[in-house]
Length: 298
Image (cartoon, rainbow, N blue to C red; front, side):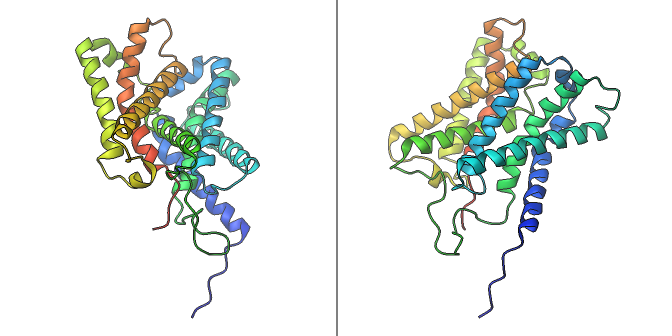
């Protein structure tokens, strides 16, 4: 019987983790880095709005690393350290790419430079976090350090801790929603579509958004659906669909506000924009809730 291979040194593990983070950051956010509307948002973004965005982005990183990171049993200090590193790497990657493609240079004024890097860096940081965990070929958290039998993977349905499980599911749904919707929210097409919609069309999009959440979670047999979605009662499907819809609408409204799409617009038009963006956001929330789970042993 052959001897087991020794674990790679700490430096090699760190290099692999950073490589996965960089790949994930670019994979999920490169379209945003090439989007002119994002550059324009950076030119006019208020410092207070950028600060709020940084805070919310950091909370998402904390939530994702807590519920689906590589080390699901990590302590709070480790989760915070990972999140700070991912946020810093996201901002650095955004600055490098923006400089390489000529969006910023030595003559860019500091407010514009900070605005562009912060706005772009938030999306990159979430991609870094997801890539670090999801692009690994290992199944962390399932096999313990001694190589023994695995424990219960993080965030599976646990009747003994329903509140913690539900909080984790909402966090992952929000991360998935932001990853998908951030590519659409800053574009002018959202306003154009919302301006042309009738009430019947708005209701139709609302119904389709609800239906997509239910179909993805309960009828598509996505990876992990049997582990992370409740099927015990008839009301579980309704509850899961409504919860996903509410997450999608909240994420849509938050992104539209952050990108300044609510400025000088009435409540009805803001609601119409939120409904329009809610459709792709719901796909991200429902699919992301399953696909962004911690990897499990096959």
